[in-house]
Amino acid sequence: MELQFYPVALKFRHTFTISRKSKDVQPLLVIALSQNGLTGLGETADNSYYNITVPMLMEEVEKHRAFIESYQLDTPEAFWAAMYPKLQHNMFALCALDLAAHDLYAKRLDKKLYEVWGLDISRNPLTDYTIGIDTIGNMVKKLQEFPWPIYKIKLGTNEDIAIIAELRKHTDAIFRVDANCAWGVEETLRNAAAFKQLGVEFIEQPMRADNWDGMKEVYEKSALPLIADESCITEQDVEKCQGYFHGVNIKLTKCGGITPARRMIDTAKRLGMKTMTGSMNESTVGTSAVAHLLPYLDYTDMDGPLLLAEDIAEGVTIVNGRIIYAERPGTGAILHPDVSSRKS
Image (cartoon, rainbow, N blue to C red):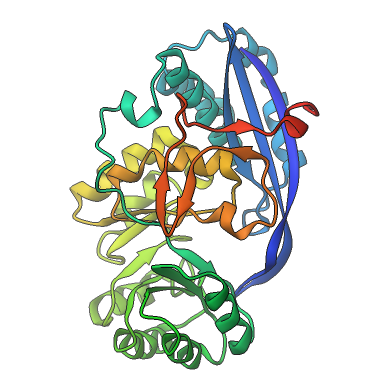
């Protein structure tokens, strides 16, 4: 397979703020794998929380160029298994390769990826739209400029209950709350009780990822369901979350791609936990790949392209929360010509 890199940095529509940081630009890396005249695309993101940068990702994959370019793709799962020993320390890099392999494999079969798996897309969950932390007035403006059926509200301030109470005055949409590890036990329980009265569906990652004792107490007492994010990174974490969270948010970049994500979904369902996929602010390349997992899921947060001021690809489109697949095989993603002409 031929390997190509497409590093990009895309601006956000608004400064994107969560409890621990703000950013105006999202660096991303698209990887292309080509074989027999077909090309598959995968994507991964930089992330300071996990100490991941795009140059680091390119360097990691480049070390294995000879192996990758000599590999004859059979199945994406076999390719993932071959690459895992080489990249098990960097799931972000492995993710981009795995997504590209899935895209390429489905194109070889001339099917959309969900068709390869024999899935029914008629009951796909709607995606939420994220409102980042800001002044209460600005958060209201962001909500009003983007009418949507489900919102994820980023919290972790001294005004969290006041934020949700004010936003609720302006919409009847479903709210989901994401604290990104910002709270303690008492704050989580207090907020959950208040939010239940304000139409919040669940709380995502209320406390630090390693605060298992606190999560156990919250799990037993919370008025709302709790979804793991930072506490659920790779396959081994799903079972750890049982009895501490009611569900898991599986992010392809963190777990190493579609191959392990499908196993994580199976494990979570076996344990009676809710399943969700999340966004790392990917472009339409990564979002188009995530979309094919929707029939497996209870919830999804795949609003990356909606949060960006610019995009680099065509693929799935999102209309009022509903995912519309591109009429192309594979994941459906294709790079804009100005991007594909400047490969690295």
